[in-house]
Amino acid sequence: MYYWLGKLAAVLRVPRPQHRQHDAAKAAEFREALRERLHELNVPRQRPVRIWLQDEGRFGLHGFARRVWTLPGIKPVVPTQQRYEWFYAFAAQECTQGSMEVAYWSGVELPVTRKFLEQIAASEPAAEHVIIYDGAGFHPKPGVHTLPEHVHVITLPPYSPELNPVENLWDLLRDEVCNQAFDSLGNLQSRLTVALQNYRQHSTKVTSLIHGWIKRTVNASSPSIIPVFN
Image 1: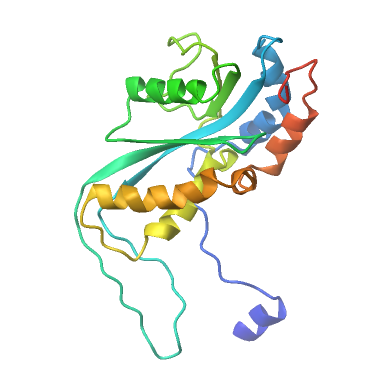
Image 2: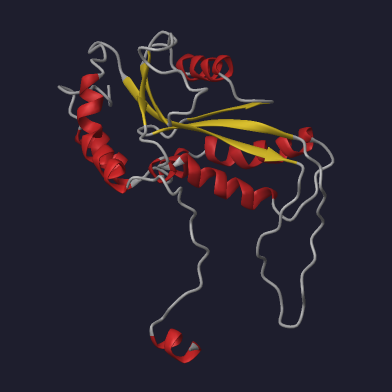
């Protein structure tokens, strides 16, 4: 078997989990319709527009292991612990300028998400801010909840995390905190903050995480549709 795997240049990969209710057709439809969705927002023409992808990730003191490089014959050992304390990191990546906003909260609920949307809007008060995120119950929705001023929302189709590039950020951050046992949530937050600063200080690292189809859609949105680059 391994002979033929080698002939095929096969590689061993960890599969990405996908919810059984995932609808590939709806995900593809969202990609195709994003430009139209941006147009339908009817964003004021006299203000610049920033387009953000937003998501939340849970981090805690329960240790977990990931693969490491080692010499032949040596089995690596990493510290671990079973402590069920955690917090949620909120992160938003801006598509055109590579800005990033981050906040830590003890839980996820509507008032918390609204505060984070206000934080995004305050990052550039003179602009309109389009937030793209999933349809979680703690995410304010247009027509259902009151949104902060100058904030507009586009909701991703259900069970489609692959559409949100912030998911890639969580995976990279977990690489930074794996194989370690942190004494407190504060120490864990400090380690995450150091890793996140590397992105916040280098906008190209943020934009490199944005999916190509999102970049193409935004770049194709001329000022007559949505003044992204003003």
